[in-house]
Image (cartoon, rainbow over all chains, first blue to last red; front, side, top):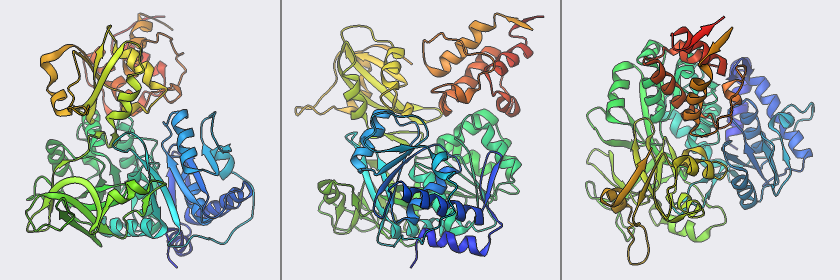
Length: 490
Length: 86
């Protein structure tokens, strides 16, 4: 029987003294990591968590989060990782939707539909009990909430087999192994960061957890001080690192063996800077979805002749392009990108109609439009959804629009993505209002209701929101709405 | 040591970084990670604001050295942007 946890246990048995995790001044060896996982699992069981139950995990990048993640799997339960900047009301809604048995949350919260405990309380439990791992390949491992096109979060259901397949595919492409020391400033609550944790279980390397990208300076300092061989970062992170620290990252060129990049496209200029700065580093940029983790990879140096591609299918993954009827198209023809592989999700949690729409007979429909060239490289030409990609985090404009309509004086609103020097995109809100509305007012209104990345960085007051006859917002027209603009505040 | 003109400048830097009109002044001992909503992007905005006030780029080590509100004040004073009265 093979699962991520069993892989991790094998690593812990074979190299007990190796450092598994570092976070600030703390570090944990693999044998200790294993022990913490099982004592935490035993404690969670005393709190009522059992096989198939969902545990909502909401916390920043501390040592407690990886312990909790694998402890949940050890019980045959389901991990529901949630970003620590999730507002209380959203947290409660997610716990309710997931029908969580228990929630582990860093900060005090109210209104939760299930009991809440703190990560430290759970993982510091002084029990010596151990349990036999219950996870099976066909059991649900993770329920990952992702932003839906309408703003309603979708729960992506991944089995143990799915997450193991993803981790193996990624590790095979990136080429990391037990001797690697990898710096991860990505949130473990997000599919990309969580993927690096899963890969650790397969490769048996050391993960250095950082609380976030921050100003980029601390991340670069950590890479140099630990002589890191690996790094995982979103494109916006590299723009921040470059703006804040110049070329200092280049000092890592003799030890930084690989980088994994994902969640958003990289600016050509940043890509060029990075490849020149790190000529020997394997720079792997993935394309994928929470529903199909890392479907394709491009390596910047070896694929330099294929500018604009998102790469070729990851190992053990097949990428097809299909027409509207779901039939496969030949190389060079444009259609919807469809993915097949062991890492593809099972379903959307409690949303059978959405699940049915997500799949065609050939595989998972990504919603992206593109073509595969004669050499097997995938090129994307656009996406069907209106999601705004803010530094790798997806924002549904509908969610922000629904909230801003509640703001006093707002008659109508439409949101689109606005180019941003560091984040790639930020949210721009066009408001139809019967009074002047300051951006600070919008920020104050939204701050308690949504995550920071969803708060519009640009507000523009216009005469009307362009809509189709059926009432749908014409976002492309909105982007060109300058002729009806009155004021703009950034 | 007493720093004159410091309050407005440091508060303005933090206010712009946090995108708020809140004028409350955290103490010098306040750690940046204790300030609500000072996430990654707000920290970037904070550094850019400091650089705007200084009209100069900060080094990597200077950026890493800003751990508290007091560090911002000290940095501005060291660069001659705040008058220090002892």
